Image 1 (cartoon, rainbow, N blue to C red):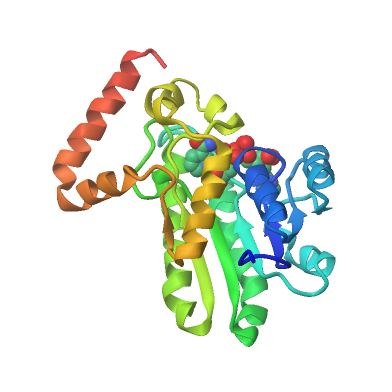
Image 2: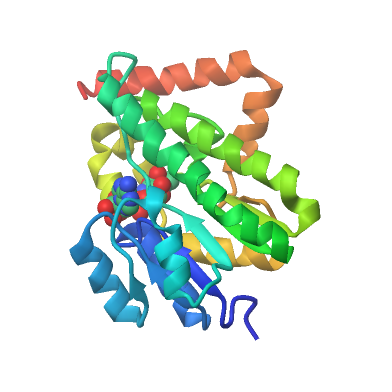
Length: 254
Ligand SMILES: NC(=O)c1ccc[n+]([C@@H]2O[C@H](COP(=O)([O-])OP(=O)(O)OC[C@H]3O[C@@H](n4cnc5c(N)ncnc54)[C@H](O)[C@@H]3O)[C@@H](O)[C@H]2O)c1
């Protein structure tokens, strides 16, 4: 029997892309699913397709409504909604604030709403869709890279703080995944992400392997482990390599 059979699962940003793939997979594994997206039409379409409950709205404030829809308990919360947030240091304050709000604070707010019940019961699962950019970086996308580092740091902090009290945390850190977000990433996405891009369903497979193996760090692109090691062991070399990629991107005229 699947680990998540009968579990109450919430997936944010599930109106398409990776979130929809996660929601479909949880439903196929026998979970009771709440589909959230800021776009009500997309939320309803995915929920109807998989027999889930639609809870549209900003991912920052849906835990109470989702919990009620699931009969009082959220077993698994997938903090998946995210903004691509391209731009450099000169990106507007609004772009930086939105990246921080959706990519980091929505996770913090969800954790605040979930932790009291999870700690009392001694169980709960928090799945954070971060990005390889949260371990490494993404050329041409400073607000995205910085906020995804924040999302990774928060997932890590949750895991080490509450694992002895029954909380399971998973941080999914893919490179390119063929979704609307990758299309919207433009020339930087085409240069850096598209050549090794995978399907949203591959991300769901990687998450389920990670759940079975009880692993925090989920790498749908296994090669990211090597890049992460290289960044830590020789930062100068890693930065020089990344600078070459950045310059190549500049050369495309963007
Ligand atoms: N596509 C990639 O290459 C890639 C790579 C690494 C990580 N990710 C991450 O995966 C996650 C999902 O992205 P995707 O690629 O499926 O993109 P996507 O654009 O297909 O899906 C993101 C969904 O989030 C929704 N959303 C945005 N803000 C929201 C909010 N405040 N509340 C609720 N929903 C909101 C959007 O409406 C959209 O349906 C994101 O966190 C993204 O950063 C994507």
